[in-house]
Image (cartoon, rainbow over all chains, first blue to last red; front, side):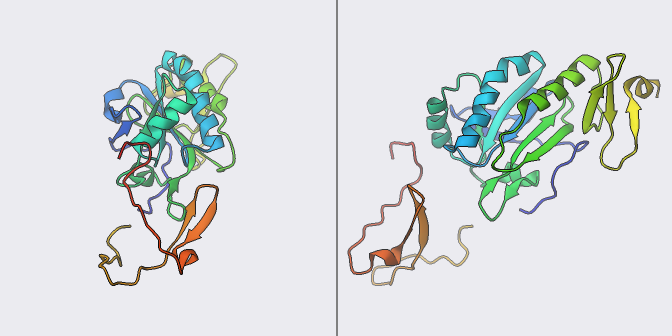
Length: 197
Length: 50
């Protein structure tokens, strides 16, 4: 199950997982929207709880940015159901990557074989199913959701969409997104230049 | 994960030792209970009626 860590620019294979209410959640059902996959190690642990509560709190704001957030861990559906009740989740879907164990995380190179659970990570997929943001956090660190949301806002308001293999975008003086290409370091290319292509 | 090196238990066999983490982060081994009768109740999933 050892897979290469996913990087921006790649296209995700479609997958379906079961949510806390036994509903099927399928990635391809959200084509045309962005999807934020928020992986966490285990239910019933403190940082993971905080990570999911942050997402729940920002679900409406994310949806207004055409972005669907979901939590994903290897825990079973009944476990996720009990945990969702405990956390008081009403909007956020939390998905069970239970069997085959950690398969979805594994395909993105996010499964920790030794421990049997996934990394803590945020993966943002754009409207075309292309990965545009990947960040893996230390297990002991609560992900900075604001950073992800700022990134989404820049995409949303700049009109930069589609095939931008962007890792980091900032807004330039004219209010346009300037996206740093990936780690191959091909340099900075502004949105306006891109549109001239 | 499953199948590899596993044996189906039969009565009369010596139970293979194991070490698992229990509630409260306490590690329990089968051998901790040597000298006592032990019932292993194995069930599918937490949070269900089963």
